[in-house]
Length: 126
Image (cartoon, rainbow, N blue to C red; front, side, top):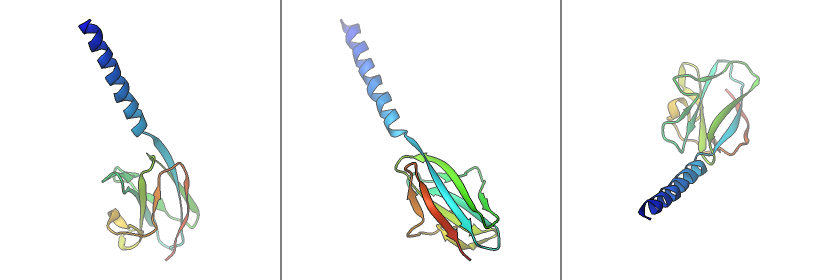
């Protein structure tokens, strides 16, 4: 009798644990679109405003805008996560858009919610 009760409790616990784990780990894709009109190379990083320290592309890499075409950057993020862009002229971190180099600044309209959608074309003018 006691063994049956323990098995039922463990089964119920595992159901609750795994159901909660799948509900919070919902991933989405957010499509960022950038067009740089600056004559110099522009570097871009995307920063989570929800998960402290989470950066795309990460691993000390950056996205590069080196011509005047529209580039799309697709990231995998958590549903509802707020993600902000930072862009700057290469080797000139004082010339920036959004939150800038290493997420050092604040902005009023450079963040989007991860919801499986896409951003408007973000034009980076000189």
